[in-house]
Image (cartoon, rainbow, N blue to C red):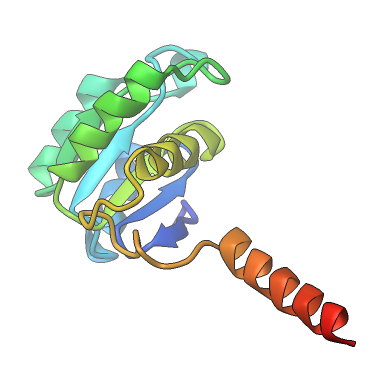
Length: 146
């Protein structure tokens, strides 16, 4: 693949800018939904527009969602809207933006919004931080007992 998806969980992966030529490979990889988190024109003429990407994705059988956000300006309202969108999108989902950061940030914030929501694969799986807290707590308790 010209793109290199990073798997967050069984429901969602993210990557850098998707080009029209990447669509067949995305479908072959098993993705069901493609989410564009970039505003049109962010990178000038080298960036394919949303209508062009939508047409190619839908022609290949992918659901396409355009949800552009500005880097480092993601609002709570946008996270709530994104949560609703991905809750109803066929999985697995591939989200993209310039670097992959916006796509993963939106997904992880939406997932944190209602962590008990079983609609997310692995939503009830302990996070790495909660696992680390358990290890620290166990170590601390051993030290207290010495």
